[in-house]
Image: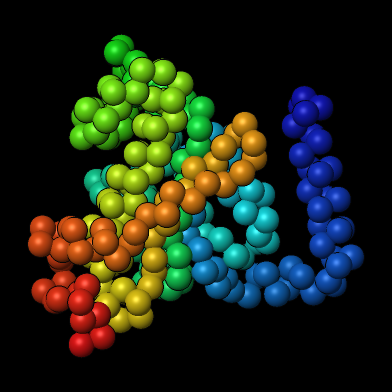
Length: 221
């Protein structure tokens, strides 16, 4: 085996030792249950790791990642993760986090046949279509690229809010709240896009209300 592969197990050994050194019962407690407040939906990019950039510990963040942080309701993986997080873990915050210099978003801006990636990237191309006027008005290609990253996060947040399990949980408990972030690889900073969750709820209520309830204005009633 390669030395780079073997070093992973050495790193794991050191990590175990450090955790036990801090708390001898760390792994006993970790094995009992998980009670995260956050669901993180991010990109599979190796440079963007949820727990590290958020400064959180094991058990604090439930995570799912895919190419370009897409939430497609036909994708059983992401929808199952969201439903489990909302209904069973009862997370209070759902975070969709994209990042600048995203290869998936860049590929979606490229007019070429990418084979099996085409159906997945079509989700992002659809975001471009929805916002084409705004994007095409940006002359600088780099800035247009960054803007599409942000708009993709925004649209994926809306896709989360469309889900019945999210709507129903929000009626009962006034959470989870959906947030849109962009991680800037150039600075290491998280940028909160300040998605107006309440406004999005109101805007999509007529079409996407799956609860047979006035779930925005009278959530408790």
